[in-house]
Image 1 (cartoon, helix red, strand yellow):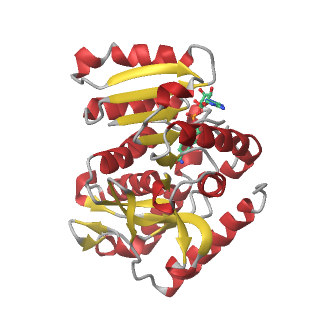
Image 2: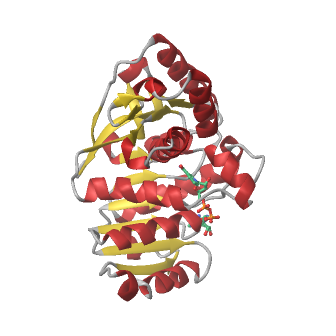
Length: 308
Ligand code: NAI
């Protein structure tokens, strides 16, 4: 199993580290445009192998795509992250050009790959990948909902005073502060609806904290987060590599599902060796449906800024 990660920055390197620690891939290639940067990150990570007990071989390259040839899974984390006060959408001007070039270089060398898009604005960058490269739709996946759901579960567990492993919940919709649709109605603690344990005001606060989860960290860190994003990407990579048939909310190209067309938006999907094996259409109530529609409208408006 060969995995390429483009962008050896904060998220790319964190993702490589989690993949290596889980030890399911034979090879991880880090590629970056910055001279020597990916090579350095790869060497540093390899020097953790004996300490962390993995055999995954991590190598780095400065923009040599021949080294990525034959990758089963490619991850795009290249591009600029947001600074405090910025929205993800403001990154489109720079990141669209990067994602388009990187995606086509990757596919040239790995025509059968599965592509995971992470760069922001992620739903629009995933849509751009669909429009600009020739891969079947189940092979292009955007990562956002897995991270937003992890943040939702963190906030829920905090509000409930419960261990995170007792809590379940999912965030669908666009990967933006206004586009996220946390499904509080379906969130549970030990399979019991969370509304049994906390009042509506507290639940509303959980929802608000989840939506600004990325912005809160960006303010604290001065740049966007990397541990949880890296872990979320590695979970998707593992689900595909190990054919886990596991459900994650991911940005997928919709063709009628949830009443939406020609848009990439976060919906529950089953991930396995072929990428997106199916899109799961869960029953939403009217409020959730309306929220998903307005989320889609927001993403469509950003897609309209693309030159495709
Ligand atoms: P970073 O600045 O630490 O790393 C980005 C790396 O991309 C840099 O090392 C840079 O040299 C490299 N790069 C730029 N242009 C390139 C090109 N043409 N080819 C190869 N490499 C190139 O940024 P960070 O924090 O790792 O974030 C990366 C992206 O991921 C940002 O767009 C950020 O907004 C996004 N992100 C998305 C998340 C999600 O849930 N979808 C979560 C967190 C970050």
